[in-house]
Length: 182
Length: 192
Image (cartoon, rainbow over the protein chains, first blue to last red):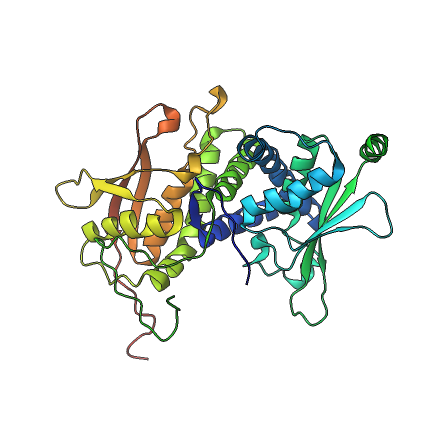
């Protein structure tokens, strides 16, 4: 059974209210683009602003305005603090990429934003989690850990719906700085 | 703990303060997502009036679907008059979706027009309107939602903002006007 974490002064709205709004946002953006890549980009851009603002909010509220300066620190912040605040739970997993030093993956069995979304077959691998990828990118960029962040569906054996992985690829400067600090 | 099955949900009257258990999320995700939408619209459309229209249209699209969700979860009985409809929107509808209530007041003589004043508004947390957006009805989506939802239950309405805290007023007040009650159309011809 999953535990739901929320902070003290929490204000809540219904999940359906959010789902309706998110659905409208995706559908609106579909009218402004010519292809899937553009749609993902627009959703990421939308999420980016949210990420910057969540970072400001959470740093102030949860961390007493302390800044993360280490890689694992910021990843932990995203995986736990950010996820708890946005989705009421910590992310299902945080993994380091096996093939590349600069890659990390945060995975979720079912992203909240995808809960009521079904992607038609002709849209291929499109994942509305691009919005969440944008949020993560905003948080990382805002904290001084620039990265390329994308959302991917990953099929899971024995599960009808694939899980979503948020893939984070940090820039060279971040890795170099991390190496210096180690 | 009550489950949804094997037990009838109680009939809700506008006076009831209890609202059915719906799954909830942090309002900040909702608020910031809405802010992102408004930002996108402001970038895409140059005229603030056009953004207002788009927000209303988005709200309308939401409203025509939201009404089914509302009716299935709330178990309200059919309203006998528009005054009841307004109360249901204010006390049950807003509560169920936004976690806040509204006050109904200022009825006209015919009972077809009233004010809905929000006690609290999760859409506007952290929001300030810049100089360049003074004509923006930031919460216009709500007007569209109400209009769309009511249209699906055969009421054609006009919903507009008359007071907006973001524009310097002291409250969020919408004016809800019933234009026409459309008779429910029987989809089949009797003589066929």
